[in-house]
Structures are given as structure tokens and as C-alpha cells.
Image (cartoon, rainbow, N blue to C red):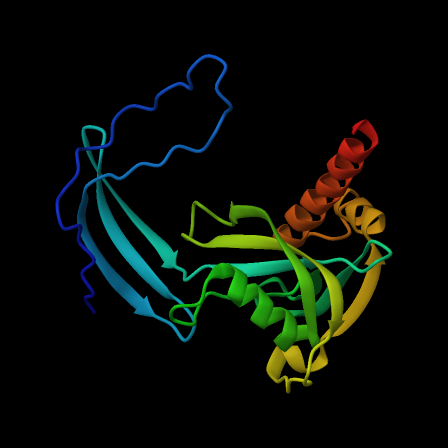
Length: 217
């Protein structure tokens, strides 16, 4: 099955990695190599598998990866700095793991923030008055192109309606956990969901730095 996704104009071949300028913060480096061929080799219900042949160095490499729409995730904190966690079954890992609310960027024209707002209402029947971007992450850069945008949500209140849920979402368990306990669970290896881990650690640092600034001002 073919689904060509070729660049309009072929950019230059990938060059050797460059070192950051002295004193510059370390950062991921975008690279736009020449795509010699690209096709969907498996079309799934939620996402597809794509095969790319890429010009790299003095030759070419062939890579299969999951072609992912991306997602938004929410670290929702109440007035007592408890974080909302949900537990649901994830078949690939055969676990009911603890997560933060999240959802795919699968609605045309919807921004990551709008997706986060929609998912908070649909998954846990809440709305938030305050939204802040936390971090954006590549979840599995060796196997998919997914980017997850995490947001901090505060000023929580019940949504106007309760949403129906099915499949794995039908028996979601919801817990309000002190943020410090969630961080401790991540560091102890009891909570292993990557998005949850990044989200609660980033939220804890956001709160710590905010309080430090308030003390210093």
C-alpha cells in the first residue's frame, strides 16, 4: 500500500552533528534529511506504520516507525496540590497503569491546549480555570514521531455534563494523590508511565521555582 509523503524540494543531505556554541544551553537539534521514499506499510485503527528511506551520511538508511498524530496530557492540581491520576488497562504492557488524563490530537483544527481542555472534560468530567504549558516531549523517538504536550491545569470544577465511557475507559479508577507522593512513586519505580513521570516532575519543579521566586521577591 502506498501513501507517498515526499518533500516538495529535496533538502541537503544530513550533515555531521554540530556542537553547541560555548555557553549555549544544550538542546535537541532539528534535522531535515532528504526522504528518498516514504510509504504506509500498515494502516491501523488509531495510527499507521510508515517506512522511510532516508539519505544519511554517505548512504541511506531504512526505518519503520509509527506515524503518530501526537497528544496532549494534563497535570491537574487541586487547591491542596494533589494531582489527579487515573488508572486503566493498557494491553501492550499487560498492566493497569497510573496515568494523567491525555488524548490524541485527532480533531482537525484543534490546538494542543484545546485538546487538553476537551480531554479533561471527557475523561474525568472536570474543567479548569487556569492553564499553563509545562513541557513537550518525544515519547519514543526511536520508534514513533509522537509529541506529547503537557499542561498544568488549576482552578478545577465539575464539567457541565458527565461523559459516557467504554472499553478500557469504562472502568477507569480516579485518585487524588499528593504531588510529593506521586513524585516519590516515580522515583521509587512504582509509577512507570513516562508521561505521568515527566508531568509530575515538571509540575513539582514549577511549584518549587514559583515559591522560590515568591520568597525572593
